[in-house]
Amino acid sequence: MPFLAVIYVLIIVVVLVDIVFTDGRTVRGVPKPVWALLSMALPLVGPIAWLALGRPQKDDAETDAAPTEKPRVTPGSAPSTDADTQAALFAAQVRERAEQQRRIAREQRDH
Image (cartoon, rainbow, N blue to C red):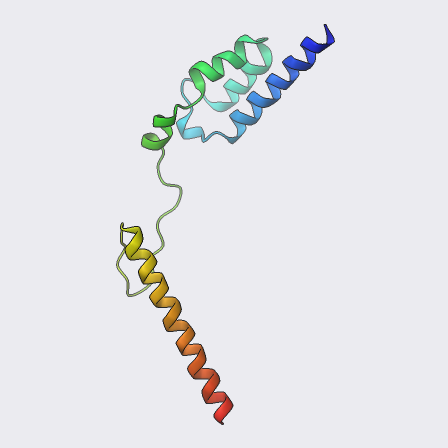
């Protein structure tokens, strides 16, 4: 019998951790605090209900979730949706900054 209690506690802990770390905008049904209370109050039914009804599905998380922050745009550059273009722009900026630092170091060394 004590093993069943340990298993139940483990299930509750796993489900509560899952509820806490799930994005609140993608939870189905009721809000996250209600799911947490249901999972603790209803033996075995609460966690099963969370896994079956409340937990966001994979496609829900991809389509419903809004971006958490705006993309950063450096002055003088236009936002780009192409990852390769962004990577190339970043590499060019790094090279330009490195060349600037080398130039400054040469000038300080020569003077």
